[in-house]
View (tube, rainbow, N blue to C red):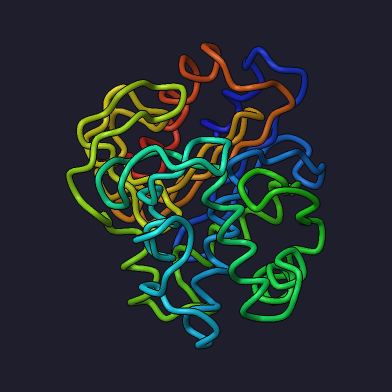
Amino acid sequence: MRSLELIDAWPVGTAAAGVVTADGRRAARGPVDRPFPLASVTKPLAAYAVLIAVEEGAIELDEPAGPPGSTVRHLLAHASGLAFDEHRVMAEPGTRRLYSNAGFEVLGDHVAKATDMAFAEYLRQAVFEPLGMAATELTGSPAWGATSTVDDLIRFAAELLAPRLLAPETLAEATSVVFPGLAGVLPGFGHQRPNDWGLGFSIRDHKSPHWTGATSSPATFGHFGQSGTFLWVDPAAAAACVALTDRQFGPWAAEVWPPFTDAVLAELTPNG
């Protein structure tokens, strides 16, 4: 795909990117086997493991977890009321979209206790191993502590396009708006009304500004990371895209990522 060549001009030391479509086509650019820190792109991976734990019956979405009144569902949807990086309650559950790393750490502990297994090991056995993601590992927080490659994340993106580890209806729920209408800050892009999220996945909807493209469908879901990384899935295009870099997120990313996504989508659907 010619659109992937745009990463060559990004103001970063190293970048790698890949695209996968629902019918199995793949394209990539850059060192796709090089591990990069994912930062918050870790969250969709962790959320997938949590959802598998739900399907296995180890936990339930609506069981208590986190602050009083909060559930697993609240934690996944950044609606528990926990602060960004502290285990401190900032709001009543379900009233604000407070993006919370602490919430995902509570989730990891909750799954570990329920399964009698360290969360990193549960994530490996539930997600990485069955998808063949041999180069991916979680060595820190379930919110931001994973490293991976474009090759591995393309495997995960393919799973998001056609789930095998989760029931399709479970993934559909996870990538639909949970607790609709909640306002909040989308990190790096300011206050959004509403700031819609699914269960561990950011939902594109009509957010503006945003890290995906102007032509991305409202149903697009995924995540970006402060390490200069992103993964999106656009159901309307039946495709997903991953990009990993070695430069921290900043104005450069907000400038180059949206036109890059638009170029990828235009090449995938040249006739609109």
